[in-house]
Length: 155
Image (cartoon, rainbow, N blue to C red; front, side):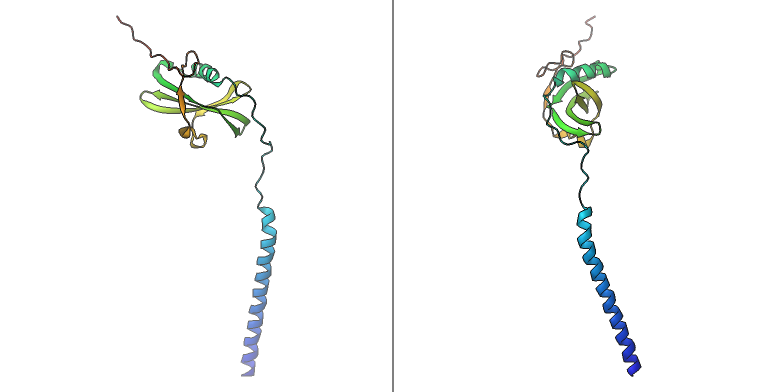
């Protein structure tokens, strides 16, 4: 009987030692892990935005040079500018809505140093759906005036 008791006592001493080691490991990880939880900071600091460019005329010029068949599109509207951090650095973002054969399309234009440096069909992270839009004339670049529709020949 004494031998069984001693074996059981050594097992509980071992279990107690293992619980102590586990607790010590948990305490050490709770002390060490917060130092690893910092978020990586951007290599560029958030600079104050420069003066906003004349983005409506820049956007109109860019779209006129990019769109193959401009007359197939209608109802051009543009959002206000937003200062955002892109993969190419800080830039102004303007979103453009237009009708493409009856379908609403959104286009994102990225402007740096008074030039459109990148453009694409808008994705969800551009947040173009949450913006307010104003009609603009694609030909003249005037804000608040819709692009005149193309009149077919009368004859």
